[in-house]
Length: 325
Image 1 (cartoon, rainbow, N blue to C red):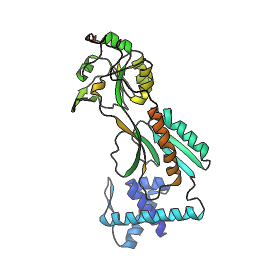
Image 2: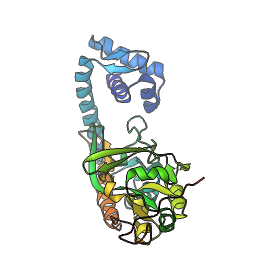
Image 3: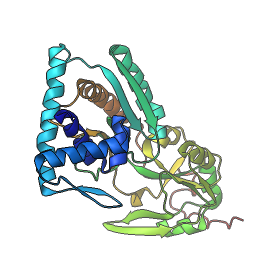
């Protein structure tokens, strides 16, 4: 069996964490993957992978071999592109992912603009309100909102957004403005599952973290639907600042509990770590980063307090929220 093929299959198994997943990535059958890895181990005279019924892990020898194998595979790939005179030219298919609302708002137009300037690139954009495993799902670039727990990924920060609670001015006038996180228990809550999947919402009281368990009156898995319900006066919902900044500036929504808001979260462009980054990935990241930064900078700021007609005039206590059936 070809040594280069064995090396490529082994690297795919190590990256994917399993034989079946590696087979799907390489478009070969699981038995073919098993044969390639077994042949490689037999030729080297050492075990590279520990196999159990649930997972696959690298041995010490496997870790050492994987580093060398990836370097050699990358150098071969670069040599082939160089021979074709394509080392610096973005080409091929690019897979990108982002959250649904952010992707519709800004990422999709940027991808379209990028393709107009790079005729040798095609692209797919996957919009999902969940964290995508780049390696397992064949994604090359992700736009992620939040901290990045996986240190094996390369991230370029392009800005930040805030988590904010909002309600319509009419709702606050009729039911009062919550003064502390605990007041939310007496309000109608609209929960967007993708943004706040747990009913335990987190706030800050000075340096102290505060957790409040809420009982939503309305649950929905789409951010825009939750925001529309809040704008209609149906209750209080959570959102990210880019989703509601314009509506707040226009007076259609008002922020609440801003002095208890958690710290802003970063917006980042993310791709897999590699010594040689594909030209299409490098070009897309360089093209997209300043455009995302500019779009986030253009958003109106979120005021620290709602307008005076939402929760009563300044200096007066807001009315106690009415019970809702």
